[in-house]
Image (cartoon, rainbow, N blue to C red; front, side):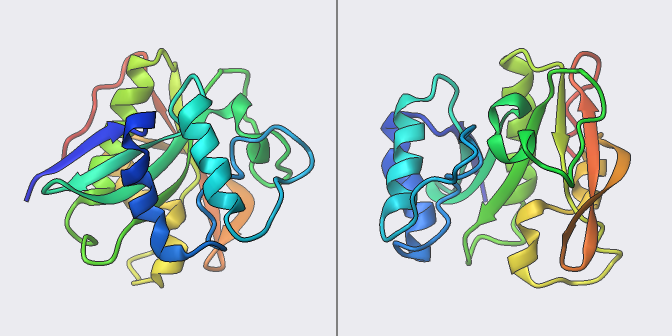
Length: 199
């Protein structure tokens, strides 16, 4: 198996759509994170796809990365400068811990049939590489600690602390945000000195 990771640029839109299409026209399409407006984007059939497509085609920084499992679009990770992620800017549960202009990872999506094959780990390694190459001084994420338990896949979109620790992230603080009844942990990787973990 070969997993490759690439930025979600306009010419890859069809592959982005292939990753999200199974959620249907009312699916999340990972579009609400980047807006800085205090008013959420319009809801309704097709609005998520339209909003994400607009981001992919017009944002100066790609809003996420795509994973290809043996050439097949199989996963997605959303990341970007925290100051450009409206839901984090406005969040009362996930704090800003200092003035470092960090980038943030906010979600993963791995398609059925491609899970437990290293796709999420490859996306995370790609995100570290991409953020560093883009000049980010540090990368944050907000996963949960599964505590060795197997959790429903619907909660795995935030990621698990063990995967981030294996990639060199450190725990900073438990936030007031929760997923699967567990606190989301603010974790950070310093990109000015850290080396990408491949393990």
